[in-house]
Image (cartoon, rainbow, N blue to C red; front, side, top):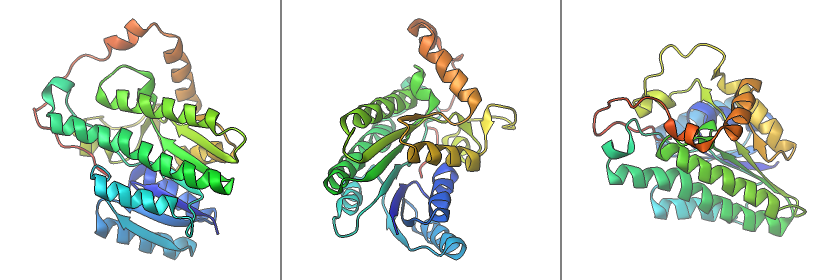
Length: 261
């Protein structure tokens, strides 16, 4: 059986991606910060799909913990066939109202962790001549709307670069750029998003299914849903000065909660 490693796998889109990979016959390595949530997810996925599930508790902003996950990704005796870099969080305040520690943690989770794990995966996968790297970015990465958007922009461009460099190796790289998805992300980041209804709120199950189908097809950039593909097309053609204008600045408390998977 092939094996998929998914970070941020206990909730939201990460949990749905893990479920669908198990449904498709993959054994799993689930990575998240909270052991009890990992164990609960493991029990449920095993019961539904009868696959082997391994658990790694790791805060990917901790460099030693991240190194342990990278070692697992690169282990030649227990190959990881699909790496899904999904873990992350958002900040509920603008740059001048967050702490430096929060900004550094955001970079560690959204930039350094997927870079380190992608590097580990690419080395192991190219040696075997097969494998798949799936990085979960965001439509925000095509905008200029804060640290989160900047981090996702890095991840999108890194994955595009990897895809070109890996051509002909048997290894593919896909970056998934969803828009708003109905998960707990916004609550945990302290970002109010109302009732979450309408055409621009996506279902996690459908988003994950489209993302995995695009990755299996070797597509470099996956933008789930036609409405967000239209948005990205527009964003790519707008003048940068328009993208820099962004939404009206909101007032938040100085030290907001952060969503961590």
